[in-house]
Image 1 (tube, rainbow over the protein chains, first blue to last red):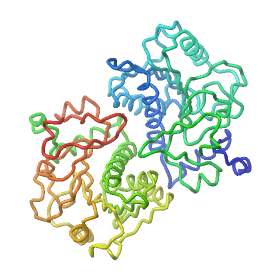
Image 2 (image 1 turned 90 degrees about the vertical axis):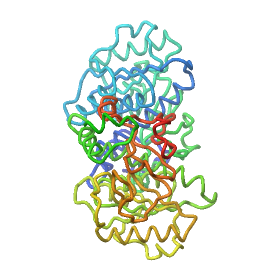
Image 3 (image 1 turned 135 degrees about the horizontal axis):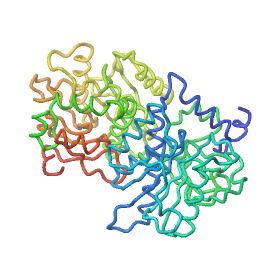
Length: 255
Length: 255
């Protein structure tokens, strides 16, 4: 824990992020179902805030959420369902579905509110004419081991990047860590994927130090004892909000 | 389901409320952990709204939450934790603690954010000088079988009532059903317990038809298929809110 206690800025490295996650879910403590529900809800609130600022009044916003094989993907599934509750239309791409019961439940919950869950990206994506207001990258989170990105996610990330380059009305939003980035070092693999928006969960990871876009923190559930142990702080969330925008690269000053 | 399909006003009777709850949690579907988290969060949002309107600027609001032996009590435990996240000070009275793991977890989660969980009411309660801004009744919910209220809850309800009668600055807030009321018929047992505020979860129960106080609906998770089957509608929740105030005794007009 030496690295945590010497880092009081609110950023977590990959090892401490994993250790904190384990401690949060050690019995008696939080269940995965609880934390994923709150994390996904905070993502939905951030996505809503970003999209509402840019939306055309009369149209129902459409969001494409790309979900990876682990917990980051689960956060995306939860966010999709809440976005539908907020009045949005959502499509989910979930190529490598977890066989764990909770993830099977999350997929069913999406389908029950009218969300299409597909294994493949919509054909149009990458050509700059996709119908979406935002594409959410919920592919890899803080446990991603940097290196070669396995298919189909390498191709999907290229499609998202090409779509964003060609379509300036589209917002790209990453959950917790921009997929493909090294959690500690950032985009050292030069994937070139740079989302417009990052939603850090619980607290920002080291890679977000260099993130230039809009930056939210969500996941309003950290007990003081764990915050102190890991040398992080929850941001001063306003009112009942589950999410808060912070100024990128100045977490120290604001938190 | 005849009673449900013939009742399109958004009110549920006790039998249908129980059946809807079972259907919501039939695999693959929601887990208790998920629904309780969202229900409790919506209660915390409603309590926050009520208390913020009346609070003295400089003081941290104090809330006493009285939790019963079943799921209504679990909603109260979740609400207490979220209220602390919102900056409030909470005390919990939980005389008959469930031995189920999730409830043991919920108690620990309360303690981890500094909430005192006691088996007995604070001594002062009932004399009109308790330090609380609100007392939350999370004792009995829609599965309460009307009849004699067992101890210690009969005494506790009397204490809450006496405290409210003597202390006009106190708000009393019931979760889902005012405790002691018949879920279908209302206060037919003449307990005389009349909270200032009612937070209906998912949709109002029949007893709330005659409720004259402030009335919120929370629990923003009902899939359209189940809403249709039970003849109920979610209220038009604003923005990302998990709760919405409706006009008492006019659910038909507003929903």
